Length: 329
Image 1 (cartoon, rainbow, N blue to C red):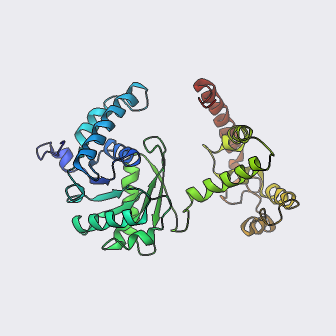
Image 2: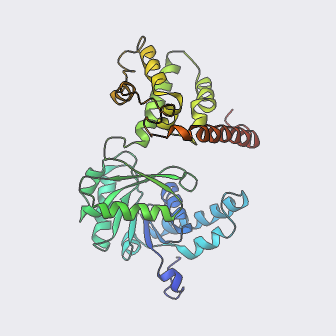
Image 3: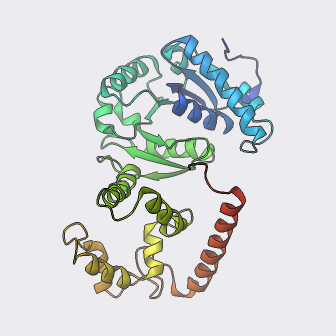
């Protein structure tokens, strides 16, 4: 069993202490991220043996990631110093500043786990859940001092996806949100704070796209391969650099407004014009060409923005050509 040592030096004794409960593929990846960010991270699972097995796996994975150029040299040594396998949940969370729950997406299992965490953790320890689907308010029912609880949703594969969804419930303290974001930022990730609604934001957007794509294939309008090709090579090509509102502002909100009207000839309800869009158009706020839209980019910065956009797209195409096609077919 790999255990923390009290004599490991001042740097480690002052490091943030984190526990990740659930050491499988998702939890293990989150533990890697946080440990490489400088935190002292305990891994816990249903047994000491599983926690130790996953600890060993994470070191092997790290070696491979270094060999593949995905992790910097020395990463495995950092993990050996900062990551350890606990004998149980209680040992892992006993002195933790922050605990991330990563057990299966079953409400009963999460409630049981969060209750154990609450009973064993310090009363001031922050507690996050990596749930992608379950209401944070519903999970908070199992947490004592629920003002310290929130969703901290990493995406798969967590070592390589930079965004993290932070989801407070109605009773989450503002200081909990701020401290949790700071912790995630320290690990090199970016955060977005969203409300506790069904699907949150990430999955609501992701599944909306998939729902429309599935209907196109079901109706014989395009094959799955052709839909994927169009997404990858058209609007999806923009998404690493710009979100939907920046893209709309650059295209022109009046253009979007017109396109909605065209779509409504075939799908009047599904593509009803969003009021937030029509309100902006009626106010003459048409995006970058007027200096005001969703993001209010000043008109004088439009040439700079377009130059960046073009450079980004050419760089993306070069990267795709360098990597070659994905090994799907």
